[in-house]
Amino acid sequence: MPLIEKSTYRPPAWLRGAHLQTIHPALFRRVAPVTNRRERLELEDGDFLDLEWSGGKGNRLAILSHGLEGSPRANYIQAMARALMKRGWDVLAWSFRGCGGEPNRLPAFYHSGKTGDLETIIRHALSVHPAEWIDLIGFSLGGNLTLKYLGERGGETHPKIRRAVAFSAPCDLACCAASLEQAENAIYMERFMKTLRAKVREKHGRFPENFDLTGLEKMRTFTEFDGRFTAPLNGFRNAEDYWKRSSSRPFLPAIVIPTLLVNAQNDPFLGSSCYPREEAEASTHLHLEIPAEGGHVGFGAGREYWSETRAVEFLAALGRRT
Image (cartoon, rainbow, N blue to C red; front, side):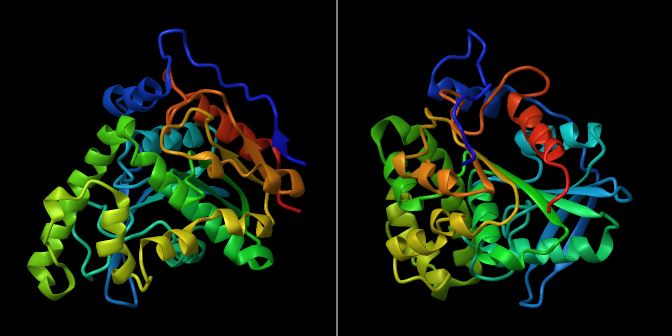
């Protein structure tokens, strides 16, 4: 019954409230990049994925997956990479399609349930890196992706994949879409929509038949955006079908490796269905930790955030997968 009742996270006195805990790291934290070797991985479908490595000869490798409209250069990715490297891990951080600073080649870009690309990254890492085992860490959308991937594979998860950690994972996408449509979260939605609209305008220039720009500038919610673009581009009937089939929560019971999910109770992005207590209580592998505070991908402050220390402690303490 790995439901962690008492989290050790306590925010500093000056960092109070969900929005400050979410916004402060995004705006004010600065982390020098530590993944310094870049690689472009060509895909069978004609597209590509961009990778960033640190190290390359160790026996432990961590693969890091970023959040919505993020990249490997996001501060939370580089800070986690720094903490891992300090303890002896090599690191591979990767860009979702269209998130590496260059538009991807195909009409469709990434989405919350596109686990095939994570599988491709893992298989590539296994083929070129000498690690004895691999750990997976995902943030927000990348956390949902990581959890869904592990649940989909279940007992067929590669034996070298030992442990996983997910922070601020929207494991019920419909619930999160509803949360982000609330008026108090408009600042986050507009930040996401600004870059997503830019992606769509660029895509329209190359694939006009796939992108109807009518009303694009007035779109303010994921219901509108996913219904118009994400769903049809990726073979879903509508936004609701996309959210249902791409959410990780239904896949959690099938996870067979030690996995830590940390979702703050005051996360403004997450709704009530993103705290899978029943699944954790019934599982011997899924550890659910719900700090009272932390915001969304927050858990600051200081040079090394609590989330980085917590992830490394979890990965190291459990030892090898049995």
